[in-house]
Image 1 (tube, rainbow, N blue to C red):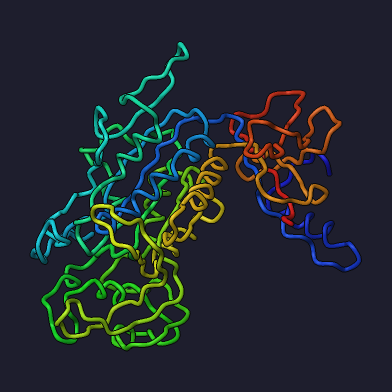
Image 2 (image 1 turned 120 degrees about the vertical axis):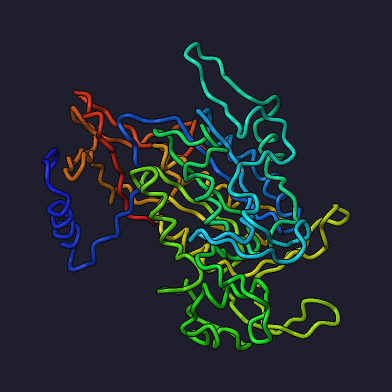
Length: 443
């Protein structure tokens, strides 16, 4: 079969037949470990979506973890933009509800930040950071200083934004032909979106979510949970969700709800780029579990109201302006569901930790994968690997070396921690539309 061209379905039938005939054992699960396009792109559009109603120390923690991200990705033709989760009282249906609370102190009004890119505390010429190679080998930059430090300053967006956070809708507002962000999104670039939040997504479809305060439905952000999350145990309806207690089997609410389903935002990104392989999504947010509803007073002398119990807690730095010693986050059920829709082009981690380098490293790995890095950063079984050239629905298997066209695993000092890399030897150039995939059983 080496070198044979077969439709994808036939190829997998062959795999199941051959890999499964080892004494009746089940065939190993083969995962895509490396995916290298014949025509690689070095263009990356990186969008950070930052909750601007959370503690400033969390934004600082993200900034501290950024240098390894850019070190690992290496030199790219890079655009970096930052947008906040504040869309005021606007909705995807076009309605705008009346102002809630005091704007500038967690209140919400109008379009909020409207999905417009922000520079935070950074000095950058334009609405976003640009760092691209010129034909003569020099770099064209619209900033001075170290890349990671400038981005660190960009994500310092404050902590007094709207308390009804809409990260998914803010992402769409930033990327959906927003004239304020012209030039950020490039047609041929890989798009990576990274979310940082300490509360779940509340992307509003119906302005009724912002309706008047009532005794049985207080005008608090718990409305986002009542309308946007359903739990198979203890939360199958909005009223049941408001009952105190531990819930289980929680996920985004389906059907006609007041919030947009996370899947609509995946559909948006795929349509925007034309190919799901050109989209990477990363998230740093509250652990989805444990999920519990408690009664908590919004103020010292207030009446206890239904609220989400914090799913994680960590100690913040002392003495920082706008911070307290203990930081918390609520379950990010909708954000988790959204990230998981992107399979091997997604990564997420918990926000409740002082060092966010772990989640950032996971996101960097997924971006490198999508950009066509040949580096193998997982523990694999080389004997259970196959390599294929994929062009549309047709697959050509490549045999191991030696052969005129063949593959091998080599040590590559440019890979993180000197990991192995996939190397292809060819006797003739591949079709420019070819994507070469290494599939392996994972230890």
